[in-house]
Length: 248
Length: 237
Image 1 (cartoon, rainbow over the protein chains, first blue to last red):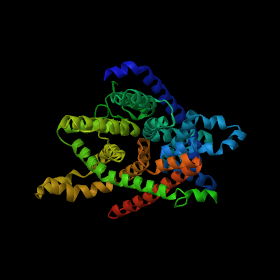
Image 2: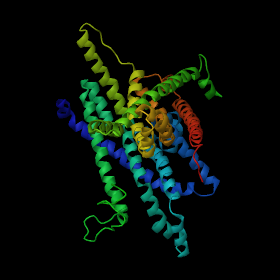
Image 3: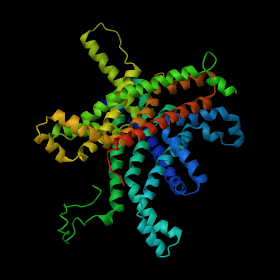
Image 4: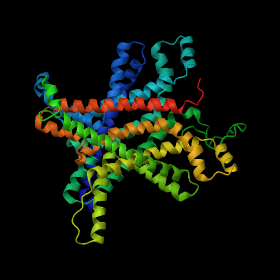
């Protein structure tokens, strides 16, 4: 059990950094792309709405593995054209292809989440902002976006975890993430316990992430929490438990 | 025109091979669904139990399944359960040959576990959302536990759990693509084989993507209809 870990821990660590790199970069790119697209998706203009709808439906309705193959292997069919365009170096590299696919996939999911968040912003607050004469950018910055992200935060956390798990698929196109190294070690040693170590690594990352994300949620919803250790008595009439925070 | 030739049925095209792969994909998903649902109900029942141990087991199971990549679960089942079965067979009968777990069965077990873990949470949520008074009323009229579950809780649970279960079903359909990695001849792997001999990767993988997309859209439509039917007795504004 433990020998595999002693012999191969540098490889697993190396795989861990690859997994984290893949997940982090694609999630951040998707995070940047999804907000403007979500706002465009809500516009009344059908010319904006329909392409985004199709994009979201396609990336949510097909397996990630198939998308990855379509982009990584599929680009090979247009090798000459892509070389002429000067982008073949990008599609030749499995890392960039995986990043590209994961970013697009995550954009589709995050976009839907943000759309739901934008829809759930209380309309009265927007009206109040307009009544105060706020310009559009200020309205977004001070009222709409804080609400949206607060509502969308738990779902966004779920999506990031899904992406982390999905990144294991990159091992199929020869990338050496945790899964890739694990498969390689297994094919050399035929020792099943390496899979359990990999499982432990994934569980560890997700658990740590869940805790970190909870802290972030608590921070962004801190105005909704009663002070836990404050000397002021919590309102009695509401019959509140000790720590009343809608995130726990 | 040339593209259609590659996808035609018969000896020249790959249409019939892709269709047989699609059959495997669909049957894998359809066989997994009842197994996963059964597991999900068991997990949900364990996690609403009064005793600590069932709750602990259910919690550990769902946390592990939801924290692991589906691909890793699949590999653990495919290699791990295979080795375990071989050890048991060797122990029972030392002269037995090497037994290989079929990728289809491994796929069913792994995807069933994944579906069970996720649907357990969905069903638990639905179970806990039910009105407690109904269970008390049923007990007062002398119903036994099975009757309460079958006649009162199950119909209401399904209505509440349907959106979540629908999502999981779509996810299950998409996850079946992973079994191609352990050499099951599903749609994805058939496309791989076709690409190997025709060198037209974009064409075949696009076909695969469009097929999955069509299946997902079809089932989304079905689920929407089911939801409409399940909610027909509910007054909405």
